[in-house]
Length: 400
Image 1: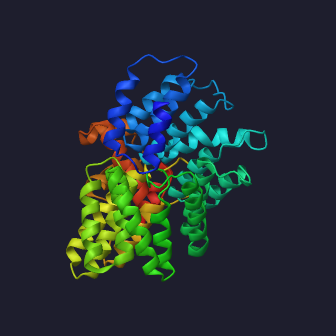
Image 2 (image 1 turned 90 degrees about the vertical axis):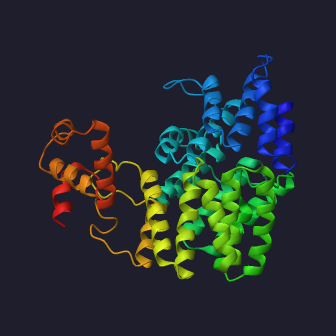
Image 3 (image 1 turned 90 degrees about the horizontal axis):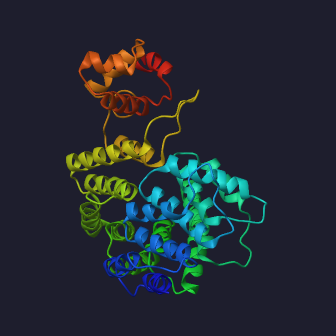
Protein backbone atom coordinates (compact mmCIF):
# COMPACT_ATOMS: atom_id res chain seq x y z
CA UNK A 1 0.00 0.00 0.00
CA UNK A 2 2.87 2.39 0.73
CA UNK A 3 3.99 2.29 -2.90
CA UNK A 4 0.53 2.83 -4.38
CA UNK A 5 -0.35 5.67 -1.99
CA UNK A 6 2.97 7.37 -2.65
CA UNK A 7 2.53 6.99 -6.40
CA UNK A 8 -0.87 8.65 -6.15
CA UNK A 9 0.43 11.52 -4.00
CA UNK A 10 3.40 12.06 -6.30
CA UNK A 11 1.14 12.19 -9.36
CA UNK A 12 -1.34 14.45 -7.59
CA UNK A 13 1.40 16.96 -6.82
CA UNK A 14 1.16 16.41 -3.06
CA UNK A 15 4.80 15.57 -2.36
CA UNK A 16 8.31 16.18 -3.63
CA UNK A 17 10.89 13.75 -4.97
CA UNK A 18 12.89 14.15 -1.77
CA UNK A 19 9.86 13.18 0.35
CA UNK A 20 9.24 10.14 -1.84
CA UNK A 21 12.82 8.95 -1.40
CA UNK A 22 12.52 9.33 2.38
CA UNK A 23 9.51 7.03 2.31
CA UNK A 24 10.61 4.41 -0.19
CA UNK A 25 14.23 3.72 0.68
CA UNK A 26 13.68 2.57 4.32
CA UNK A 27 10.87 0.24 3.23
CA UNK A 28 13.04 -1.42 0.61
CA UNK A 29 15.16 -2.81 3.42
CA UNK A 30 12.14 -4.27 5.24
CA UNK A 31 10.77 -7.80 4.61
CA UNK A 32 7.83 -8.12 2.22
CA UNK A 33 5.27 -10.84 1.57
CA UNK A 34 6.54 -12.88 -1.43
CA UNK A 35 3.08 -12.63 -3.00
CA UNK A 36 3.40 -8.84 -3.08
CA UNK A 37 7.09 -8.59 -3.91
CA UNK A 38 6.82 -8.02 -7.67
CA UNK A 39 4.06 -5.41 -7.32
CA UNK A 40 5.91 -3.60 -4.52
CA UNK A 41 9.21 -3.54 -6.39
CA UNK A 42 7.44 -2.30 -9.51
CA UNK A 43 5.90 0.56 -7.55
CA UNK A 44 9.16 1.39 -5.76
CA UNK A 45 11.13 1.28 -9.02
CA UNK A 46 8.61 3.65 -10.63
CA UNK A 47 9.03 6.15 -7.80
CA UNK A 48 12.82 5.91 -7.90
CA UNK A 49 12.77 6.49 -11.63
CA UNK A 50 10.51 9.54 -11.27
CA UNK A 51 12.92 10.86 -8.65
CA UNK A 52 15.74 10.47 -11.20
CA UNK A 53 17.48 7.72 -9.27
CA UNK A 54 17.81 5.76 -12.49
CA UNK A 55 20.54 3.35 -11.38
CA UNK A 56 18.60 2.40 -8.25
CA UNK A 57 15.42 1.91 -10.28
CA UNK A 58 17.16 -0.36 -12.77
CA UNK A 59 18.74 -2.36 -9.97
CA UNK A 60 15.26 -3.14 -8.65
CA UNK A 61 14.05 -4.25 -12.07
CA UNK A 62 16.99 -6.63 -12.26
CA UNK A 63 15.88 -8.36 -9.06
CA UNK A 64 12.70 -9.69 -10.67
CA UNK A 65 13.09 -9.69 -14.42
CA UNK A 66 14.54 -12.93 -15.83
CA UNK A 67 17.93 -12.76 -17.49
CA UNK A 68 17.98 -13.18 -21.29
CA UNK A 69 17.24 -15.31 -23.18
CA UNK A 70 14.44 -16.29 -20.76
CA UNK A 71 11.37 -14.19 -21.69
CA UNK A 72 9.41 -12.41 -18.93
CA UNK A 73 5.83 -13.41 -18.14
CA UNK A 74 4.01 -10.62 -19.94
CA UNK A 75 0.69 -11.49 -18.28
CA UNK A 76 2.14 -10.49 -14.88
CA UNK A 77 1.17 -6.84 -14.26
CA UNK A 78 4.03 -6.39 -11.80
CA UNK A 79 6.57 -7.58 -14.36
CA UNK A 80 5.00 -5.32 -16.98
CA UNK A 81 5.57 -2.40 -14.63
CA UNK A 82 9.20 -3.40 -14.09
CA UNK A 83 9.73 -3.69 -17.83
CA UNK A 84 8.27 -0.21 -18.23
CA UNK A 85 10.62 1.22 -15.61
CA UNK A 86 13.63 -0.47 -17.21
CA UNK A 87 12.70 0.96 -20.60
CA UNK A 88 11.93 4.49 -19.44
CA UNK A 89 15.02 4.69 -17.23
CA UNK A 90 17.15 3.82 -20.26
CA UNK A 91 15.27 6.38 -22.36
CA UNK A 92 15.81 9.13 -19.77
CA UNK A 93 19.51 8.25 -19.66
CA UNK A 94 19.71 8.69 -23.43
CA UNK A 95 20.40 5.00 -24.13
CA UNK A 96 18.15 4.87 -27.18
CA UNK A 97 19.65 1.81 -28.85
CA UNK A 98 19.26 -0.14 -25.61
CA UNK A 99 15.58 0.82 -25.38
CA UNK A 100 14.99 -0.45 -28.91
CA UNK A 101 17.03 -3.65 -28.52
CA UNK A 102 15.39 -4.69 -25.24
CA UNK A 103 11.79 -3.75 -25.97
CA UNK A 104 11.05 -3.78 -29.70
CA UNK A 105 11.10 -7.62 -29.79
CA UNK A 106 8.57 -7.75 -26.93
CA UNK A 107 6.23 -5.27 -28.62
CA UNK A 108 6.48 -7.10 -31.94
CA UNK A 109 6.05 -10.56 -30.39
CA UNK A 110 2.84 -9.58 -28.58
CA UNK A 111 1.21 -7.75 -31.50
CA UNK A 112 -2.17 -9.38 -32.10
CA UNK A 113 -1.59 -11.96 -29.35
CA UNK A 114 -3.97 -10.58 -26.74
CA UNK A 115 -1.29 -8.91 -24.61
CA UNK A 116 -0.80 -5.27 -25.49
CA UNK A 117 2.14 -3.23 -24.22
CA UNK A 118 1.34 0.40 -25.05
CA UNK A 119 3.95 1.85 -22.70
CA UNK A 120 6.76 -0.25 -24.13
CA UNK A 121 5.58 0.65 -27.63
CA UNK A 122 5.73 4.31 -26.60
CA UNK A 123 9.28 3.90 -25.33
CA UNK A 124 10.41 2.17 -28.53
CA UNK A 125 8.74 4.82 -30.68
CA UNK A 126 10.31 7.67 -28.71
CA UNK A 127 13.77 6.07 -28.93
CA UNK A 128 13.39 5.63 -32.68
CA UNK A 129 12.33 9.27 -32.98
CA UNK A 130 15.42 10.34 -31.09
CA UNK A 131 17.64 8.36 -33.46
CA UNK A 132 16.05 9.90 -36.54
CA UNK A 133 13.87 6.91 -37.52
CA UNK A 134 10.45 8.56 -37.55
CA UNK A 135 8.70 6.12 -39.90
CA UNK A 136 9.84 3.20 -37.73
CA UNK A 137 8.60 5.12 -34.69
CA UNK A 138 5.11 5.36 -36.16
CA UNK A 139 5.22 1.62 -36.90
CA UNK A 140 5.83 0.88 -33.21
CA UNK A 141 2.84 3.01 -32.23
CA UNK A 142 0.62 1.26 -34.79
CA UNK A 143 1.51 -2.22 -33.52
CA UNK A 144 -0.56 -1.93 -30.33
CA UNK A 145 -3.72 -0.72 -32.10
CA UNK A 146 -6.32 1.74 -30.77
CA UNK A 147 -6.93 2.23 -27.05
CA UNK A 148 -10.71 2.13 -27.27
CA UNK A 149 -12.18 3.39 -24.00
CA UNK A 150 -9.03 2.60 -21.99
CA UNK A 151 -7.59 5.77 -20.39
CA UNK A 152 -4.99 4.08 -18.19
CA UNK A 153 -1.57 5.67 -17.73
CA UNK A 154 -0.08 3.40 -20.41
CA UNK A 155 -2.42 4.68 -23.10
CA UNK A 156 -1.93 8.25 -21.91
CA UNK A 157 1.79 7.70 -22.41
CA UNK A 158 1.11 6.48 -25.95
CA UNK A 159 -0.95 9.63 -26.66
CA UNK A 160 1.99 11.69 -25.44
CA UNK A 161 4.33 9.79 -27.74
CA UNK A 162 2.01 10.31 -30.72
CA UNK A 163 2.16 14.02 -29.94
CA UNK A 164 5.97 13.92 -29.97
CA UNK A 165 5.92 12.22 -33.37
CA UNK A 166 3.46 14.75 -34.80
CA UNK A 167 5.71 17.54 -33.51
CA UNK A 168 8.73 15.91 -35.17
CA UNK A 169 6.71 15.83 -38.41
CA UNK A 170 5.86 19.53 -38.02
CA UNK A 171 2.13 18.88 -37.60
CA UNK A 172 1.60 21.15 -34.60
CA UNK A 173 -2.20 21.00 -34.52
CA UNK A 174 -2.16 17.18 -34.42
CA UNK A 175 0.55 17.35 -31.75
CA UNK A 176 -1.55 19.72 -29.67
CA UNK A 177 -4.60 17.48 -30.00
CA UNK A 178 -2.71 14.43 -28.72
CA UNK A 179 -1.07 16.36 -25.89
CA UNK A 180 -4.54 17.44 -24.76
CA UNK A 181 -5.87 13.86 -25.03
CA UNK A 182 -2.99 12.74 -22.82
CA UNK A 183 -3.70 15.57 -20.37
CA UNK A 184 -7.39 14.73 -20.14
CA UNK A 185 -6.52 11.11 -19.39
CA UNK A 186 -4.03 12.06 -16.72
CA UNK A 187 -6.32 14.60 -15.04
CA UNK A 188 -9.10 12.00 -14.92
CA UNK A 189 -6.83 10.08 -12.54
CA UNK A 190 -5.82 13.20 -10.52
CA UNK A 191 -2.36 13.03 -12.09
CA UNK A 192 -1.22 16.65 -12.38
CA UNK A 193 2.54 16.27 -12.00
CA UNK A 194 4.72 16.55 -15.13
CA UNK A 195 7.02 13.80 -13.90
CA UNK A 196 5.64 11.08 -16.20
CA UNK A 197 4.04 12.78 -19.21
CA UNK A 198 4.82 16.53 -19.35
CA UNK A 199 1.87 17.18 -21.65
CA UNK A 200 1.46 20.83 -20.66
CA UNK A 201 5.02 21.62 -21.74
CA UNK A 202 4.46 19.88 -25.05
CA UNK A 203 1.11 21.61 -25.56
CA UNK A 204 2.65 24.99 -24.72
CA UNK A 205 5.37 24.48 -27.35
CA UNK A 206 2.73 23.48 -29.91
CA UNK A 207 0.58 26.50 -29.05
CA UNK A 208 3.57 28.80 -29.56
CA UNK A 209 4.07 27.31 -33.01
CA UNK A 210 0.38 27.91 -33.72
CA UNK A 211 0.64 31.56 -32.64
CA UNK A 212 -1.42 31.15 -29.45
CA UNK A 213 1.05 32.50 -26.90
CA UNK A 214 -1.43 33.50 -24.18
CA UNK A 215 -2.76 29.94 -23.95
CA UNK A 216 0.80 28.62 -24.08
CA UNK A 217 1.90 30.83 -21.19
CA UNK A 218 -1.02 29.72 -19.02
CA UNK A 219 -0.17 26.05 -19.49
CA UNK A 220 3.57 26.64 -19.08
CA UNK A 221 3.11 28.53 -15.81
CA UNK A 222 0.96 25.72 -14.42
CA UNK A 223 3.52 23.15 -15.53
CA UNK A 224 6.37 25.05 -13.91
CA UNK A 225 4.48 25.31 -10.63
CA UNK A 226 3.93 21.54 -10.48
CA UNK A 227 7.51 20.86 -11.61
CA UNK A 228 8.93 22.97 -8.79
CA UNK A 229 6.79 21.01 -6.31
CA UNK A 230 8.38 17.76 -7.49
CA UNK A 231 11.77 19.43 -7.58
CA UNK A 232 14.02 17.32 -9.82
CA UNK A 233 16.28 19.16 -12.32
CA UNK A 234 14.75 17.21 -15.23
CA UNK A 235 11.15 18.27 -14.55
CA UNK A 236 12.02 21.87 -13.65
CA UNK A 237 14.45 22.33 -16.56
CA UNK A 238 11.93 20.93 -19.03
CA UNK A 239 9.16 23.20 -17.70
CA UNK A 240 11.46 26.25 -17.81
CA UNK A 241 12.10 25.57 -21.50
CA UNK A 242 8.36 25.54 -22.27
CA UNK A 243 7.85 28.70 -20.20
CA UNK A 244 10.68 30.42 -22.08
CA UNK A 245 9.11 29.57 -25.43
CA UNK A 246 5.80 31.01 -24.26
CA UNK A 247 7.10 34.30 -22.82
CA UNK A 248 10.07 35.14 -25.05
CA UNK A 249 12.44 38.07 -24.56
CA UNK A 250 14.49 38.64 -21.43
CA UNK A 251 12.32 36.35 -19.31
CA UNK A 252 13.03 33.51 -21.73
CA UNK A 253 16.78 34.11 -21.51
CA UNK A 254 16.66 34.04 -17.69
CA UNK A 255 14.50 30.88 -17.65
CA UNK A 256 16.73 29.02 -20.09
CA UNK A 257 19.84 30.06 -18.18
CA UNK A 258 18.31 28.68 -14.98
CA UNK A 259 17.34 25.49 -16.80
CA UNK A 260 20.85 24.95 -18.16
CA UNK A 261 22.39 25.50 -14.72
CA UNK A 262 20.03 22.94 -13.21
CA UNK A 263 20.52 20.35 -15.93
CA UNK A 264 24.30 20.49 -16.46
CA UNK A 265 25.13 18.46 -13.31
CA UNK A 266 22.06 16.21 -13.70
CA UNK A 267 21.81 12.97 -15.66
CA UNK A 268 19.28 14.41 -18.12
CA UNK A 269 21.13 14.68 -21.44
CA UNK A 270 18.07 15.00 -23.69
CA UNK A 271 16.61 17.87 -21.69
CA UNK A 272 20.02 19.53 -21.39
CA UNK A 273 20.60 19.47 -25.15
CA UNK A 274 17.12 20.91 -25.80
CA UNK A 275 17.60 23.74 -23.31
CA UNK A 276 21.09 24.56 -24.58
CA UNK A 277 19.89 24.79 -28.19
CA UNK A 278 17.14 27.22 -27.18
CA UNK A 279 19.52 29.14 -24.91
CA UNK A 280 22.11 29.51 -27.65
CA UNK A 281 19.49 30.88 -30.01
CA UNK A 282 18.17 33.23 -27.31
CA UNK A 283 21.66 34.64 -26.70
CA UNK A 284 22.12 35.27 -30.43
CA UNK A 285 18.72 36.96 -30.69
CA UNK A 286 19.68 39.15 -27.70
CA UNK A 287 22.85 40.26 -29.49
CA UNK A 288 25.33 38.00 -27.65
CA UNK A 289 26.60 36.13 -30.69
CA UNK A 290 29.75 34.68 -29.18
CA UNK A 291 27.98 33.43 -26.05
CA UNK A 292 25.21 31.98 -28.19
CA UNK A 293 27.57 30.11 -30.48
CA UNK A 294 29.55 28.76 -27.51
CA UNK A 295 26.30 27.49 -26.00
CA UNK A 296 25.30 25.89 -29.30
CA UNK A 297 28.67 24.15 -29.49
CA UNK A 298 28.05 22.78 -25.99
CA UNK A 299 24.62 21.57 -27.14
CA UNK A 300 26.23 19.91 -30.15
CA UNK A 301 28.72 18.09 -27.91
CA UNK A 302 25.90 16.75 -25.72
CA UNK A 303 23.90 15.67 -28.80
CA UNK A 304 26.98 14.01 -30.28
CA UNK A 305 27.44 11.90 -27.14
CA UNK A 306 23.77 10.92 -27.27
CA UNK A 307 24.11 9.88 -30.91
CA UNK A 308 26.60 7.16 -29.95
CA UNK A 309 28.56 5.06 -32.42
CA UNK A 310 27.41 4.79 -35.99
CA UNK A 311 25.84 1.42 -36.83
CA UNK A 312 27.74 -0.98 -39.08
CA UNK A 313 25.31 -0.76 -41.99
CA UNK A 314 25.73 -0.24 -45.66
CA UNK A 315 24.19 3.25 -45.90
CA UNK A 316 24.60 6.52 -44.03
CA UNK A 317 23.44 6.51 -40.42
CA UNK A 318 20.25 8.46 -39.65
CA UNK A 319 21.01 11.75 -37.92
CA UNK A 320 19.61 11.86 -34.40
CA UNK A 321 16.93 14.44 -33.67
CA UNK A 322 19.03 16.52 -31.29
CA UNK A 323 22.21 16.30 -33.35
CA UNK A 324 20.31 17.54 -36.39
CA UNK A 325 18.73 20.35 -34.35
CA UNK A 326 22.09 21.40 -32.91
CA UNK A 327 23.74 21.43 -36.34
CA UNK A 328 20.88 23.46 -37.79
CA UNK A 329 21.14 25.97 -34.95
CA UNK A 330 24.90 26.24 -35.48
CA UNK A 331 24.40 26.96 -39.16
CA UNK A 332 21.77 29.58 -38.39
CA UNK A 333 24.12 31.09 -35.83
CA UNK A 334 26.80 31.64 -38.45
CA UNK A 335 29.14 28.75 -37.61
CA UNK A 336 30.76 27.53 -40.80
CA UNK A 337 33.08 24.55 -40.91
CA UNK A 338 34.12 21.73 -43.18
CA UNK A 339 32.95 18.09 -43.09
CA UNK A 340 29.31 19.18 -43.47
CA UNK A 341 28.87 19.58 -39.73
CA UNK A 342 31.32 19.99 -36.88
CA UNK A 343 34.94 19.78 -38.12
CA UNK A 344 37.07 16.87 -37.02
CA UNK A 345 39.50 17.69 -34.26
CA UNK A 346 43.18 17.14 -35.08
CA UNK A 347 43.21 13.97 -32.96
CA UNK A 348 40.06 12.62 -34.64
CA UNK A 349 41.53 13.32 -38.08
CA UNK A 350 44.82 11.52 -37.27
CA UNK A 351 42.94 8.46 -36.05
CA UNK A 352 40.52 8.55 -39.00
CA UNK A 353 43.35 8.83 -41.54
CA UNK A 354 45.18 5.84 -40.04
CA UNK A 355 41.94 3.82 -40.00
CA UNK A 356 41.30 4.80 -43.63
CA UNK A 357 44.79 3.56 -44.50
CA UNK A 358 43.84 0.11 -43.21
CA UNK A 359 45.34 0.13 -39.71
CA UNK A 360 43.49 -1.69 -36.94
CA UNK A 361 42.45 0.00 -33.69
CA UNK A 362 45.25 -1.82 -31.88
CA UNK A 363 47.83 -0.58 -34.39
CA UNK A 364 46.52 2.98 -34.14
CA UNK A 365 46.62 2.78 -30.36
CA UNK A 366 50.26 1.73 -30.45
CA UNK A 367 51.31 4.24 -33.11
CA UNK A 368 49.73 7.27 -31.38
CA UNK A 369 50.29 6.13 -27.76
CA UNK A 370 46.56 6.21 -27.09
CA UNK A 371 44.35 3.75 -25.24
CA UNK A 372 42.09 1.52 -27.32
CA UNK A 373 39.07 3.23 -25.78
CA UNK A 374 40.33 6.67 -26.85
CA UNK A 375 40.87 5.41 -30.40
CA UNK A 376 37.33 4.02 -30.48
CA UNK A 377 35.92 7.31 -29.16
CA UNK A 378 37.75 9.34 -31.82
CA UNK A 379 36.50 7.01 -34.55
CA UNK A 380 32.94 7.16 -33.25
CA UNK A 381 33.03 10.96 -33.30
CA UNK A 382 34.58 10.96 -36.79
CA UNK A 383 31.88 8.63 -38.15
CA UNK A 384 29.15 10.84 -36.76
CA UNK A 385 30.66 14.10 -37.96
CA UNK A 386 31.37 12.71 -41.43
CA UNK A 387 27.86 11.21 -41.62
CA UNK A 388 29.12 7.72 -42.42
CA UNK A 389 28.35 4.30 -41.02
CA UNK A 390 31.39 2.11 -41.57
CA UNK A 391 35.18 2.05 -41.78
CA UNK A 392 35.28 1.43 -45.52
CA UNK A 393 33.60 4.80 -46.14
CA UNK A 394 36.38 6.79 -44.44
CA UNK A 395 38.58 7.27 -47.52
CA UNK A 396 35.86 8.91 -49.60
CA UNK A 397 34.58 10.95 -46.66
CA UNK A 398 38.03 12.32 -45.79
CA UNK A 399 38.74 13.16 -49.44
CA UNK A 400 35.42 14.99 -49.56
